[in-house]
Image (cartoon, rainbow, N blue to C red; front, side, top):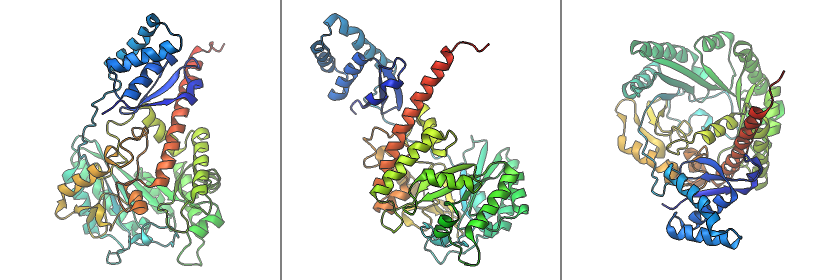
Length: 464
């Protein structure tokens, strides 16, 4: 494979001397800086696709044309050779295929919901499969947990269960029983458990909230804006119930117990500015907001090109100004330490989703979609299906991602979103791709600015 570099001349002011070139070694995700003359040598390697003698001779000629004498060029050529010796610019780099290390399970404990969200990807929780039982049974839930433990990564010290739906609180007694069941299973083999739950908050009471808090359950609550916007996008089936009021009541209860509450808004063309929605979520009591654009591209709420630009502009602003913003933390973590294997998530790798009938799917967004079917809790995972699907969505195998400069830092293209937008898990959704590239470039800018600030702080005189 040829040398892959991405130059950022627009970030020179963020280098240590304000003049050096910022460079991304695409294949391994390292961000570094070099002086301009060394950058010229690197650029020739990029142009030739390899750091051959021919490429170095071309670099010498380029620098000579800029008035750099032959004796002055060699230190810059040698600096590039030193970088190569230290593992940069691997021409034959091939990511190691990851092992399947299952550590978590998503349980669709309820496949029904009180809401009629106008953009719902889950068709109200049934995912378009009306044959599914509205509520998961205790037998199915316990068998799902037993199956996780039977294949779980033995090196992991903790396993995780996420309760999902539909609206999981509609099957609250099962959640209580499964939580205790999993804790007992884990304790018997010297492991611990963590729990999370995604909810609309409707029906949450103090007893439920106390149980969640006592078990360290992480809660993500869905809020789409202020009263008017939220009720328009997430109306109750029972029109006598105010969806926003019920959700905000739950937020207040959780905040009283937890001190903080994570909330998620779906961004649609009804309000494509995430900064405005972010502020609405804070007004609703959410302390840790996040915004995600609506899936797909062919329905009335999908973001049009001008909406997408508004969304990108606003998310960039949130990345720059909100240090606690969800995507900022994730992006900067990958900027500082890119993964060994670029992958969108734990898709078909360390997590699985089980529906109320016991079928297993690779993603919580793709229940009842046979493209994402992996087996069932009675006969187990189909290893051929798992390997095929897992390999097909690895970033280095996805059309457009394989040669993308951002692939080692990008959060990854969502296979479920790809399927909705393009009909294939491994063909990128164009609007998602545009957004991710913009976010990665912004994250790099923030990362460099943080490094610059840390360096300045170290040089600052002590405070008397």
